[in-house]
Amino acid sequence: MFAISNKLNLQHLFPSKVSIWKLRSNNPMRKSHNSNIVNTEQFDGLIKITSEMSKYLYPYIRAIISSKDNYINNPELWNDFQFRFIELIEERFNTESIIVKNLINHNYNQNFYKKLLLTLSLSPSDEGYNRLKFVLENL
Amino acid sequence: MLQNKYKFNQSSTELEISGLPDYSNNDNKDNISIISNWKLSIINQPEIEGSIDHLKSVIKAFYKCAALSLLDREEKIESKLIDLKLDDSGNYKIILKSTKPNIEPLKIKIGYAEFSDIVNCFDQLKNFKKIKIDFNELQPDIEKKSNFSFDKTNFSHTLLPPLLALFSILVFTLLSINIFENRDSQNKNISLISKNPNIVIKIK
Image (spheres, rainbow over the protein chains, first blue to last red):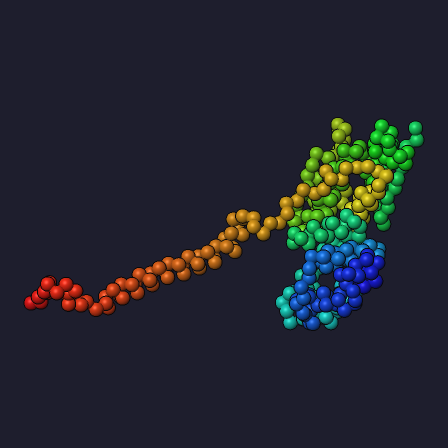
């Protein structure tokens, strides 16, 4: 993330890896949750980084979505992704919280994970950045 | 006159645009300002092609559907040339209507992966400076969520309870003031000594 932020000339917003880590710990679902103020420039910068990252990851994201679309014939990738995603959530998020419990609940999370991947797959371009920004501002 | 032809690829999808530059607008010979033909090929699906109006309708429908899907507002998109909706099985169902008479509409079903490929192809087209299409008219017209919009259900769920609470506090306070005022006036001492020395009050 830091390398991409430098590539996008966002050093003035994210001068070090710690500054990005601080913003990540803003997520109230994390175990190490801290409230920091995110200004609009940083918010915009994070959207740019997400959009740029999804450009690099598009082939992988697409392959996982495709595995879910053809789950009967090709379930491996989707299952691997789901397993690793839940593992990461359990490792880093507060699993006592109801929202986090729902996130790792197998019955609830399928559509949510698919929607997350669809969001990323529609973000890797200038237009994708605008789309992601519009969606986040209107959630 | 030779036509210009450009292709945009994204995984399972290829979009091909052919056309001519508009020399009356001092266009470069590599540009396309007049689109004569376009073709969208998706693996395992029939080819889609048509006029510039079809292309504009298809782009507009896909952009709107993408934005609505991300906002979790799954509405059916209908126009003269294309219908697009997400069905219960999680696939996008597309109906392309021909402008020619006696031709049945073309029905296609695609998954999320193909849908994002198509949208990304259109994004590449938008960013490609040599093909001139006015994308401003193709942007999805989705109502922005306003925090201050008046919605009946929203009103009854969020604003009505605190309003009722404030109203009951107001009524209770007014009643309390009245009762205390009455008690105060009853407890006031009445002096029988008049300020005017000429008046004598006699109590029998």
